[in-house]
Image (cartoon, rainbow, N blue to C red; front, side, top):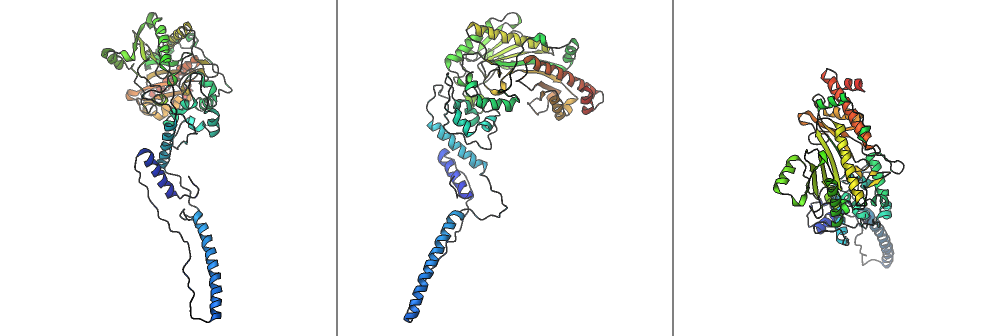
Length: 497
């Protein structure tokens, strides 16, 4: 905005820009300003003696000169000072209202869209945007990407593109367009984690409290390394309704969903079909291509909670381009017992879910490891491997799901702790666990059934995270029993710790 424009003028300008760009009307309060410019008409009286007349002429000339000088000085002052109404010295400067800031931002996005060249990944229902300027983030933008992306970093990365055609603008598009997102950036292939690491690494540090510049990730997928005693299993079976372990796996050499084209998407599906067909014993099952579901299959998948939907435009995946040409190349696998589930080409190439009723976490984890190994074997048969980095662990679309990408959880009945959900959150935090109620985080649990899982994803091995969940849930059950026996939650936590 030009220097010297008043607050009212800025509001009028923002409204005009919004109406021009989007055809919307806006109501703004108009202020009126008065400027003091000085000056008046002067006349020389006639019919006076020549001496007096001469004196008056000289006096008038001097007066006119002084008047003009004074008037010009006042004009100069008025042009810089008058537009802003006088305020007390202590009055704070007001920022532009969020609506005005949002209108300016929307106008900027429209300008970027209009000037963007065609992207080879564009489809009829989705267009990528090329950002030639650092985004003018508004107070509504909450993502780590918006906090990390300085003008200097934007200038450093804006022209970089991976060998598979995923640009820096592609990487930040979801976070620019959707201010509510927490991470605000995606990857289009494994190369992105190297060429855009100066964006991703600070995001990873902020999200995971893990510094990939200095730390190394570790992996352990051997279920025999878990410590889960027979007594613990009996205790879990008493309180735990069901157990689940899930994580994503992506195949090296193929683009991730935000950057994928039809060839890569179908290539991923082919590798996964090979993996699913190799399953034996309890893992044997059926793959259901999403675009070829019968009404009967769709209803059955929906009833079991296995069906995933096309991401909406307000969601991360929709804004990142991962929903293009839906539902081609997407599908769902599950075994006959419905204890092994895999999603193909949703957020990642494959999301693995191992689950069963009861609290036998060791068996659930062992099944998960077996599925992961089978997918890795199928990748190797196609001269590929799983995407993996020694610093970041297993790679995926969103920086929030790197490392193990693993979430091990139990659905557990806690009638005593359910009486104080805030206290349960505090207790879980002591053990690096996260409770979710019936409507997600920070909500109550219907029937006192809580979903409790590990918090961390990166910097710990899979075995370490599952072990944290086992040990933490064991202590939470002990606290629950002590509260039932008459202790307060504080007394119970102190006794158990």
